[in-house]
Amino acid sequence: MLAPNHRATIDATLPVVAANATAITGRFYERMLGAHPELRNLFNQGNQASGEQKQALAGAVYAYAQHCDTPAAIEPLLNRIAHKHASLGISADMYTIVGRHLMAAIGEILGDAVTAEIAEAWDTVYWRFAGELIAREAVLYQDAGITPASFLREYEVVERVAEGDVAVSLRLAPTDDAPPPAFKPGQYVSVQVELPEISLRQLRQYSLSDAADGKTLRITVKREVGDDARPNGLVSTHLARHAETGSRWLVSNPFGDLALDTGATTPVVMVSAGVGVTPLHAMRRHLARHQPQRRGVFVHVAAHGGRHILKRELDAATQIDDLIVYDAARSEDRLGSDHHHAGRFALAEHAATIVRPDADYYLCGPLPFMTAQRDALLGQGVAAKRVHFEVFGPDLLTATL
Image 1 (spheres, rainbow, N blue to C red):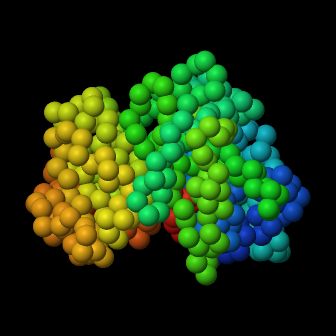
Image 2 (image 1 turned 120 degrees about the horizontal axis):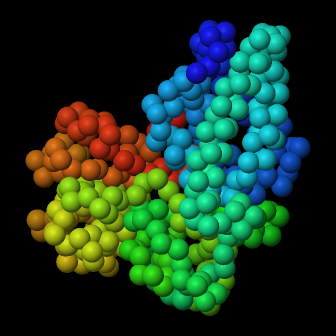
């Protein structure tokens, strides 16, 4: 528990910090990356450009400040951050750098309003937050048999397959004699890419898109097209252009808290859109191979058949009912069958098929899509603890102000 004076100070200052949170985290990144430019390698440049990174950090710090006496209340958030950090090789000493620049940013943005008492209380909260994450990350590293200094391993592309108009699947095999690590369906790996045009080395997470075979790992990379808020996906474009058969890449161990409970027998409902299909497709493939009797529903929403990533593997034998929705279907798309539909997807319209009181639900896709599906499920009476999701990028679904 926080000391009573610290708890009172945090409660009294939370509204002010919340009102200035993104300004504080924006200044934090400016300070830290200015002093430690080598850390730019750890941060997605698109998320930095769009402001999503600072929003997510602000939301996470705010959430922890609210619940630091009862961290179980934000267990999913803490686990999600710890898994992401482990996939990036974050070490305990990096938290000292972060703490120094975060506290300095609070002082710069709030000025004289930050008394010694307020600074002490927020510093205490930060180190409680850091301690939670350091402990969780230490367990992840230990369980994986790696350290932050040895979290990457060399793999070779042994198969490359185009996935419709927008993506490519890459099957990776370790270049040493050892098998790849085991993983849970739904987890991801980080891939390291050198980007000489901007003098950066970037790590990006990609979901494993097939069930484990004990020999290889497979990722599916969508070429991300930018907009006014963010540039084109630098890493996805680089991989799509250069990850040919025989090329070699450094890859992390699998991590991620969105993982199918392979020991359960309860129904599974998987709802995805776009490239969000990748972790859920791995779950579906696992069920087809290892639990073919387990029932459930697999829902995927795409613009049309050409944008339906991993469409070619949809026919694997399974007890899972498929519901495929194309919201801008083309004349050549196969429609009219029991499991293919055209038009905008609304979960409530399919509630009789999708909503099962004893099921576990897994969501992945663009943030507005996941928010809508989660809200619809909760509105149908599904318990929040049964709804699991994966966010590609900063978690703006959990960590909100």
